Every structure is written in C-alpha cells, then in structure tokens.
Length: 189
Length: 385
Image (cartoon, rainbow over all chains, first blue to last red; front, side, top):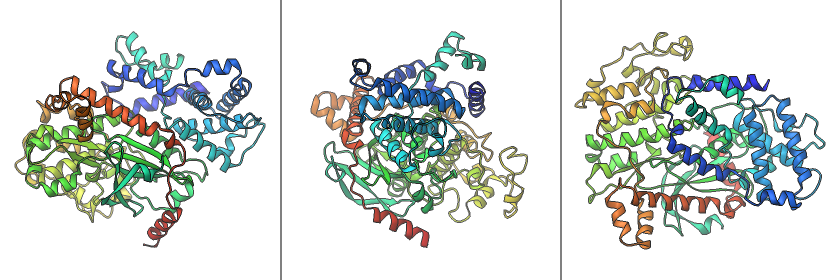
C-alpha cells in the first residue's frame, strides 16, 4: 500500500511540473543550502547521549515510535509522513522536558503524527480518529490541539524539515548523468 | 519578551485586512527594523466565522476539526524556509495567550507599489525601471515556485518598493520585495481560473497576477475593472471557449452571463511599449493556465536581455549595522552591490537577525496580549455587513 501511495504522489508531482527543467532547488548551490538547513531540523547534539544515559525516557520514546509506525501503516500514509513525525518527536524531546508519566509520550506521538499528516498527506483523518488504532489512551480533541500547538511552537514552526528524502532526487540525478530520476528507482530507495 | 515591549506601533496604517482590521507597521525597538503584522487564525471555528474570501486560508473546505488547520501549519512552515532577496523575510513569530491566532511579522521596507506609483507618477512609468522591477518580481515568484509553493495573492499591496529617492536616480538600485499581507485590495489581481472557481489551481495563478502588475506599471492604472473583473478580463483577452480553456474547467454554465468578446491586440491598449514587452505581457496574461508562461521561462524572456539577477541590497538598517562594525565596509557594500564581500555580509547579518528574533524563547511562549473581544467584534462586524 505504501508503495502505491508513494508512486501516486510522485506521479502527481511530475504532472504538476511537467516541462519544468532546471529546478533551482536541485542545483549544487542549493544542495549546500539544504545541508546547512538540515541542521535546523535535527535534535540537539547531546540528545543521543541523554537518551543513552537515561536522562530521557528511552522506553517511552520507543513506544511512541512504535505507535507512529503502526498508525502510519493503518492509514496508509507515505514514508515521508512517518519520517516527519519521528523527526518532530525527537526534536521536541530534545528541546522540551516532558513529564514522566504513561500518557504524555503517547499524546506527543499523536500530535506529531497529526502534524506530519497535515504537512504531507492530502487527506487527513480527524485528530481524534487518528487514535483509533491500538492506543492505550484516548485523548480529547482539545487536548490534542493544545499539544499540537506546543509542538509547533517548540519547534518554532519549522515543520518543512530537510530530510533524507530532500536529497534523494539530487543524488539520483547525479548518478544518472543529470537525467530525470526514474520513478522506479525513487520507489526502491 | 512581550510584544509591546519589543515593538512600537507606528502611527500610519498601511491598509485594512481581510477581517476588517487596520494593519499597522511596527518598529523593532532593538534593531530599528520595520515590520508589518499578519495574523493567522489557529482555530477552525474562527475560520468559519470570518468570511475571509480571497485568502488562501479559506479556499479549501475542510471537515470540522478542532486541531490546528493544516493550511495554517503549511503556510507558516513555508514562511520559515523562504530565503530570497526579493521576498520579505519573517522577522517575528508568536501566538497570543489564548492561542487563537499566530502573529507573523514580515519585514517592511519602503512603500507598497500602489503608493510608489501614486507618489512617483512619472518615475514609475520609466521603461528601464519597469523592466528592473518586473525582473525582481518574477525572480521572487520563481523562487516560490522552486520550493513547490505558490504565493496566491500577488497584488500591489504585497509588493514593496524601496531604495529610491531624489538622490538615487539609478533604476537598477531600486529594490522590490514580495511580502504576504492579507490586505483588502480591489480589483483582486486574481487569475481567471480562480474567479471561475476552478478547483484545479496551480502556480500559474501567480503568473497572471504578475501580468496584471506588469500591465498596471505600463499604463499607470489597473488593467482590469474593480466592478466586473471577469467581464473586463474577457473584454481585453477574449472570452474563453472550450478550445482555449480545455481541461481547465467546465465553462458552459459559468460563461453564460458573459458577453462574447474576441481577443484584442495588446499593443493597442499598451501604446508605446516595446514589442518584447507586449509579447511577455501576452504570455503572462494568457487565459489558459496550462499555456501561461512559467516564472523560470519568463526570466529568460528576451524582454529581460541584459538584466542580471539581484543580490540582496542591504536595507538601511543592515547597512547602518555594517557601518557601525567597520566604517570602511558600509559604503563599500553599498557601492559594489554585485560583488561578493558586501552583500553577503549583509545577508549574514540579516539571517542572524532573523534567527535571533524568531528563535528566541519569547517567541515560543505565549507572549502577546491581544484581546479576544477584538477578534469577535471583527467577526461580527464583517458578518453583519
């Protein structure tokens, strides 16, 4: 399912930009900008160490990511969507002290997935419906909204993150002698 | 830091917003920069209460949901990545304590295009100036399109002109910035497919708006009527038929009320304009969005031969800052606008400024004291009328 979804998305994009050559984003200069900008979309440097040393709740993070993976598959969202939610989650955890209780990490996961779906998907289920699949806790819509806003403002609204996906197109073009990437190779990677 | 502590409201309003509130400019007390505020509503119930016609926020019908609207998230995160010499940068971002809306402060330099044309009736018609401004406008639009976005609301109040004056007669130095305020403007400068309520919109909508602005610069007044926008568009460009708008929209129903016109020769309306200019104009004002010229192509059009892309010209504030740092750098930067050292330093300082302001913890906390009553009364006002 995920594969077809991805295919459709790429296909749509291609239609939109038919005949559009020399996308400025894909030039060498822009690659440098992207590398630079990627740093703004990563957790802080000590994040991994804090996770390992127990400064952060490793278990809660794992559960949250598990749930995101399941929900992502359940709603057949694209791969970028799950990547973005995990990116938001990690960035949020490294910037904000989340209370150590059973439900806060789950609420964060719901909010991150909801935001990522709104960024990347064309059809987004209502936030309360997102919890349908296998959640231990079910939150009020208003609670989710407040969490969404907390995530958005903590991440300073930098939601259009530079991800590995942003570089794919560039590198595939490079190895293909500047020819437009084949849809199949994009899918495979 | 509190919004009121950081910014001082300047007494001159710059227009009325779509929700019928006056929009003011604010002075950043620290940096001396001027910003203009735009507010984006965070709540669906408010979105529905406000008849925000013409705003990109209201265009798509969404199911009732209490979450943060997807368009709001997309819009703001788009503003966060925009970085181009011809696009006004986002200097401030914060939400009110009640979390009803987000306040966005965009840099505001000079005056908007409408005021520029009014105050400089003769200069603004100068062919060389028009060419330079159009090139900058299209560069900004091309940048928007390169990040898979469209502006959607290009009009003279969203185009700022700066760095002109009696002491500055060099047309190449005049700077243009595209900003993104929701000011009420008539006529709307919207593409025919928007006015015909097509649901297949593309980046081509910006190109038509650019065409409207180009035409307005050439003749010194709006090209199309305020009252009957589609009627006047068809009068000049011809009423579309199934052939000319194929695949864009089902026209039969919607075109019934419009008179049939055949396209006019643009060089009769735009007298004395060089043929390359007329050719570019006709490609921008092409009725069919699928055949309309794209921004990157338009920049390569022969009308622009001999024009070079512009580096960011230091704004007065940035230039002043550079001068304080090293007195020899300041004038040098202003003089050699296209060489490497000066402008890039100015760009760095701009970038640093932006991240410092937007990235401050104050921005993420709820800092703004803005009365909720204001908002509701604005909503009531507009629904009564």
